[in-house]
Image (tube, rainbow, N blue to C red; front, side, top):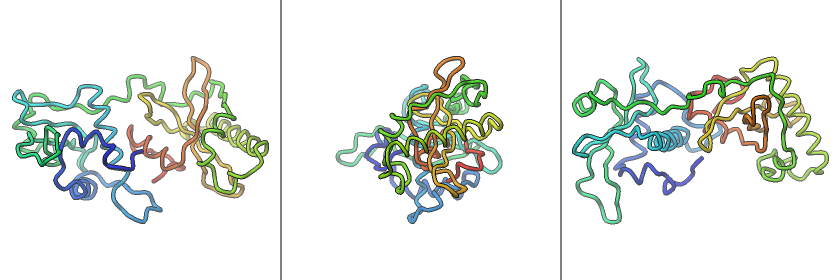
Length: 264
């Protein structure tokens, strides 16, 4: 999850004259309706959508799916989003003809456009950009209840203590370890009876699964998301956990999570 625009590779590619306005138009006027801010956000600035576009662009760049006209005067990529009528939405860019001082980006953003838009058809009808591919191994997207789950409790606590609920961050380490072990056992049993609670995420160029961790007694909501990944043909391992916001941002790169526990 990125917090500063200076970290965005998308800005190395193109200059956005009115970035926030363009994102707001995409979120509320063009794309199918979706929550692009977290429910507790004070400033509503479509932070989930901004994170989604940045990492989608990185994946498309890796897959060589950012398309250019033969003269390199126009560029385009598939955002992976659709309109309410399920029409693909693209980012459309033109050669940056009058760059400002200190701007070395080759393109200038022109707009988010539907597939049927005149500019898309005029310049890219013979090579419509494809969406990012997260599904080359579909079996990784579904929790396999036959696999053993082996967590590294010491690593999860030692590297992620600041992500734990505040009332547990100063707890006795032995007690915290027992609570974490119990929470992992509980979510493992739930996943074995209902594989749908495992939500796929994309991080570090690989597919992982997220499971809810309930550490606060009496709370119906999970405190953290346990990250598990397949170690071999019969074993999952877990070495880290995420805040729910971090987990949602990673999961949304693949598809809008259809889960009753991971929500914006």
